Length: 536
Image 1: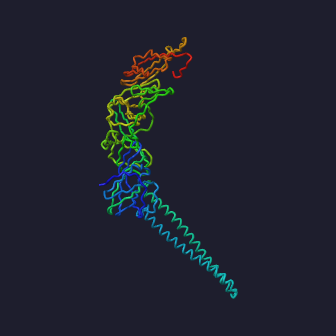
Image 2 (image 1 turned 90 degrees about the vertical axis):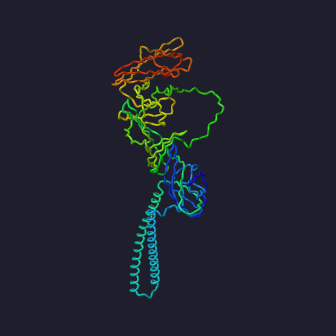
Image 3 (image 1 turned 30 degrees about the vertical axis):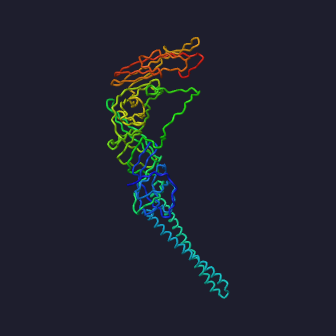
């Protein structure tokens, strides 16, 4: 049975014997929103007594305080040290076939270079001897002219022959040196292949009660990985449920590839501060006036500036449907987070690119209606209302919208709201025409004794050009004042529901095919005539 021990890393104890090198394999990974917990396995043959184990192929950077080592009960782990700059004469694995082949070739070349150097030395010494003999003979006046000429011819011929031999040997030596350089470069490349792309290593000092093979498990956190949820929403028409594909984008740049690993995706955050907050005394002080955002139920009042949850739509490429994988994912809803255990093994490469992981297929029963805020956007948006949405374990994320077989853009799903119904925007519908016009003869400006009075009147015209009836939620607004000198009066609202706190008017309209309806709103603003209001 393995004992897992959490280590605060200590400086490595220096051992005299050769380190034992082993390479770790990724077994499973739990990915969080901003980190990942990696579990790896390896084994090593150890002698009895103390040993140093160098575990290669761990993450380039990891949280040292989270390292855990699992080993049999007969093995005592004395210390653990992480490094991504380990240097050792023993680091190259000589038993690797690729490295052994290059090493053998290097040895042969080095022997040939040594032979050439010896031959060059012999030839050089011969030239030196000839030169000395030539000088001695030249000084010997007892030689006849014929004998001297014969000796000079011999010297010239022999010296030229030997010099050519030296040149040939030098050329041969250069070729071997170039080949040796290539082989050394190849050795480095093969070593890097053995090391894969990871520079990270764990150096472990252990004491073993008996010699033999030892299985080792390692566990640690690294910040070089993350995931985020995203969705595909498919609606064939407004009478069928939405087909939701729950997905994840997993990104990792740990330095090690995750090959055929078991993935778990968690919404937890192991790096967050878990200290419960304390309240201190709260003292008021003067400051500057600020503009505040108000809420209309759970939708912010700035929906009238062009946004509602999920309304933002962008054009993009068509999204293809993934295969059914719901049966291969188990969702665990814990007290503090949600996790997805995926049975299908995945390959997630360490390249910093997003890898798509399919989690679950969900059929969402939906009630459809249209929404419009023509003060800022003169188009109608199709909304799908999802009730009891908490049971689907949704997380905030972007969603692709595919409606009636066509990709229509993106929306954003935000399940972290307090309303009972989740509104999903399914895009714009051009078949509902909306026009908002100022009624000139019902609008204008008057100057009173000390006040300026402005009246604003607008007609909103909605036409349903569809072949079926539609329900439309229409919103508009009138201004509010925080200054007692600025008076605002809502004169006409055409039967709207009025939220006086934020000045929002809401109409729930039912439009038959080809039916047109007109809504009128009117409001009056009075303020000192020597003042200017620049956002009316």
